[in-house]
Image (cartoon, rainbow, N blue to C red; front, side, top):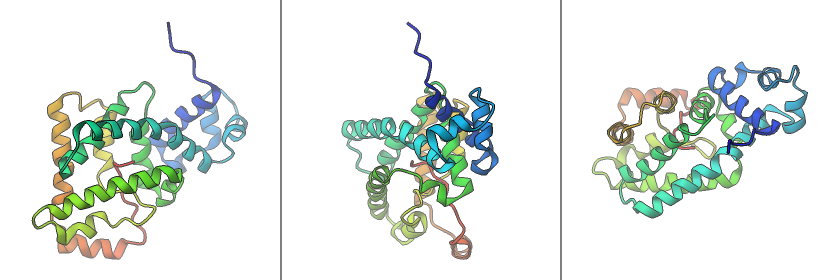
Length: 223
């Protein structure tokens, strides 16, 4: 039996996720999203969501429950005790998401991270709380890494509305191109992420971050 056709509301969510991923939050209009689902104007989008901010929030509502449930299952199964173990539980989940039919979630997240911190404030608060708990586990692991304690703030100080810092574009590219099909490729990406978080922050980077702190929108893998 074939899968049932998605509802108009779901079609709008999927089209918005794809178009925002391709063109950015400010690069796509509500009318263009409506056109992508066969509506010649933005009335259907406005009827279901009201605004672009509400539409972004709805995309998170659509994707995050499965992602958080799967991550919780992996954590329960693997009982991670170090930075690499916690990262693998997250990275494996988001790469699995890329294998889902019609999913452009990773490029959507990467696009949001390049546009504005404000976009991430559209996350439902219940998901933000869960993410902070996960972030706290990563910070605790970093503090146990010899020599890493001194640069924990620079790697993790993203504020209450900024997701954990990492390179979303690399992960999104791997996911959307189905790069990480083998276990070796997945574990290599986990190694790269762990190395990024554990690496010392240079004085040049510290100075640049201090100057740009007010405007920097941290890229994220951990949404």
